[in-house]
Length: 315
Ligand code: TXA
Ligand code: MG
Figure (cartoon, rainbow, N blue to C red):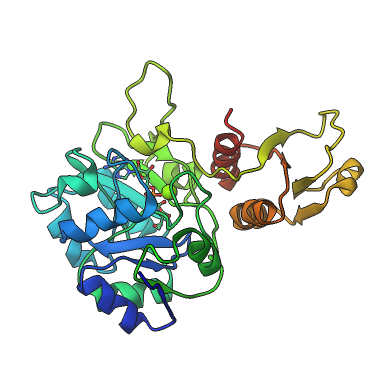
């Protein structure tokens, strides 16, 4: 299959309406989209990514009217979060309607919904005229793509179209919050922070996966975000002698890392989050064997960043 590269939202949306798969930018990471009401198209998304069928997809909308076709009810907590954070990097889990295929939800009776906050995504979605399911546009197990070039590297000739735009702003995936229970549960940390959610609903809790707890967000059981290189999470206190063929990313690197072949000295946590997946891919393309990533405090956006770093280092 030839993959068309375009900057035309009109052309890209035509592929969605024809039942094809299109990669598109959002403020978080690039997504791999298909018509949410077309089961054949949804199957193509799983196939192109090599995604296990038991990991559900997020439905993307650009208009509040679309919610009625997706969610059976909107719990009070969800309504509050939607009012506060849509459009934005937040996915709310809601009870699903009959119309939402179990292919999207991996058999669950809930569905994740998100309204991206990016002018090109909004234009693209409104031209599609249907809600669009989209996981991140990487091959399963790879870091999420933050540039169209990263999408192309993973999915060239496996999808019909890539809607080209700039590097994504946030660089990490959306916060996922389950609003179907008594208290809202954060299943995946992201750019809408736990502190921000708690300002709206103080009881909001972070869901911790334990070996005995049932996996609530099926995506959490898979190894994620991993480059080919070994990721080593470090603290300032650690006494590390960098290996040969290694790289460093983090805030205020200590002198010892000057030996590394690639160094990304991040301004702050926002810059670190924005750069991380891109840096992982750059390291892989240069054949780096070890990537040292400096830890940050697990608060604010730092919670999401540490979650991705821990997953990449397989702790
Ligand atoms: O920022 C993002 O969320 C990006 C952009 C493209 O919107 N999308 C994204 O999708 O990261 P994906 O498929 O890579 O991650 C979706 C996560 C998975 O961990 C999945 O298990 C969880 O959301 N999820 C989706 N629907 C769910 C549901 N009904 N219940 C629990 N978890 C769900
Ligand atoms: Mg993903």
